[in-house]
Length: 295
Image (cartoon, rainbow, N blue to C red):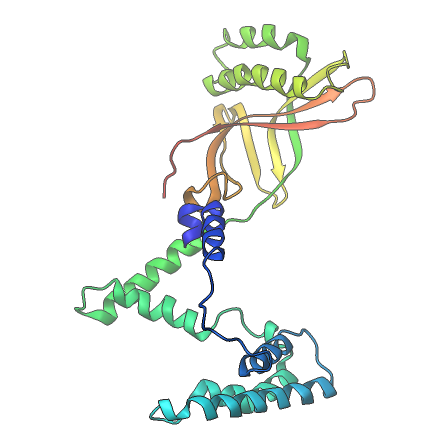
């Protein structure tokens, strides 16, 4: 939650500050204390595969730790530590591994996390009247939002429906020509205007590219993503303009809103080609960013 609200840089800053706190002067950490039994047992539980001898050793580690744990803390609990989870760990862990495989493959959520997400948090969001109905509505809303916000990152695989092919030296004159054609949508004109500036900056940054004199541009109407979805950037799609709205996954450090997703409209789908070999080919998708998003 902190990472979503403040970013990874804030977490790093917190870690650095916590690292500067001096340890408690009178605290003694024994090299052969009970915590070493737990650390050894915990590391073993993270193994991906076990053979028979390793399972036997792991069982002894569990027995030793649980006996010492109960011996230390049973006098502080009215139930003498008769806890279901402790019982499951002591008597059913080895059997579960033999039947279902390593513990890492069984589940990714702990019982505490599930209880917090599906019981405690929804309860705290109620006004303490008709609690069950409010909790069920809250959980249902959370599930709907989670499913809606699930995003599948797809890459541009191919471009189709070639509109124009021209040398970039003619791009300025071609833009001026399009401005006087009624059949060309304003978004296409906007894309062409920004494309000229983007190409100048892009080619200036590529020192080895600027030496090539024969640079051509192919502009397409559609592109096909890796999930077979089609994106559009054309003024004539069944006699109507169609420019696709998209969401692009960004680095959370660079863009914190809405889980690192940026929203925009595709203005142009194009390729830069270098003659005479048409290689290398640089694909370009020009996007007009939105400064808001709609839920």
